[in-house]
Amino acid sequence: MELKSASSGSDYGDASLWKRRASFVAIAAAWSCRKKHSAPIGPYRLVEAQEGHNFFSFYDFYDGPDSIGSAGYNMYVSEEKAVELDIAKVITETDPLSGDPVDFVHMSSAPTKKGPRDSIRLEGRRRFDHGLFILDVRHQPDGCGVWPAFWLTDEAAWPRNGEVDILEGVNGQTAAKTALHTSDKCDMYAHVSPWSMTGDWEWVTGIPNQFTGEPDFKTAKPADNCWVMAQHQWANEGCTAIHDRNDTLGAPVNDNGGGVYALEWDPENKAIKSWVFSPIQEMPENLIDTIDTAGLKDESKRVMPDPQSWGTPYAFFAIGEETGCSADHFKNMRIVFNLAFS
Image (cartoon, rainbow, N blue to C red):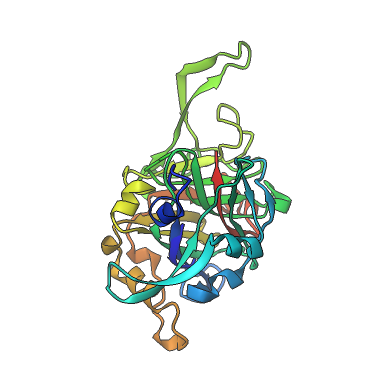
């Protein structure tokens, strides 16, 4: 994974191919807000600009097997071993978009004699209860069995405190998805109007009949219930919104020179929203200026993000009072980056 700020291919053998086939380049920024109760969530206050050589200081390296949810064929390694294997690093390269030297964060994986790959899982040190999260990705892992993810969770209290998957794809998927995973009583049905997002709910079919065990392909329903044990959905599917374009994840994004993924978690205004902008040149001017100035030490020169100027999100989830999902389904979450292999 190659990141410009903050926030793989199937050929595993040749390290020289990682950047092209098994890397992720990104910048991540996390914003919280200054606001009075019931006011719009902005204007925002930058709380973390995870860029360049400071990027890894915002994270702890998890050392151990993958979680049960994905059960990847890999082992996550410590920071010391990741550096030794050259799978976590920051390097300066010429940005093909601007022609300027830029620090890029590279996160990748390495083969082992035992079989499971050595990989990376970063767990954020800061906890969030709301905010705006922006990820600038220039190259993301893609290919058979490759499973990169950028998400929010509180695994110690999962699913009670929720999970939000912002960027996740496996086996060459090319349409971006945002998914929420929660405890019971978090349902989007009849609470999200069709015009509030450009995408649609992922549709579910083939669920085994509870009496015969045979897959039922005659019945289909939208995956709009966020409860991890919701009936007539796959186990732990959650509520999943999928982009209306089939070039917003994986190889097409890489071919376009990268993309920007943004998620607004706004319990005051009763919504969680997601956008993808790829190619990067299609980004709204406000978002371009926000990213370009996030790292400035002089706060007065930073451009504040204005999601209302970014257009309709592809994903919209209703949370809070008078919806089917109370806002307390999501709390105390941290950012996670990981690269698993299925």
